[in-house]
Image (cartoon, rainbow, N blue to C red; front, side):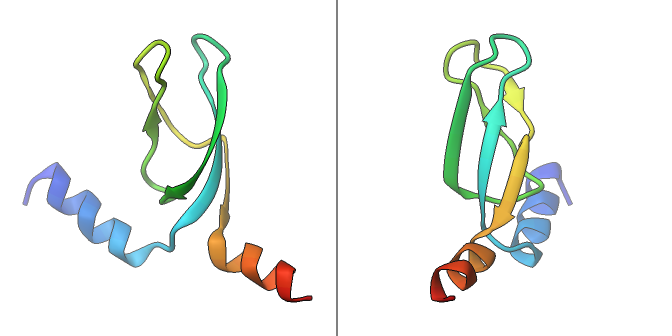
Length: 67
């Protein structure tokens, strides 16, 4: 089993999240609503892999809207 298969199986167990990212190299900030807690994203400016700075499961955000 390779890294991609391991990540895919772990991703299936986790719930999709909203995340806020902060690149440690260029301090660029961005948000994404299509991510999983164990996966990061690539900074578009300096092209390094960045782990999420802050995550909230999308289900939690939906629950807040209902109240």
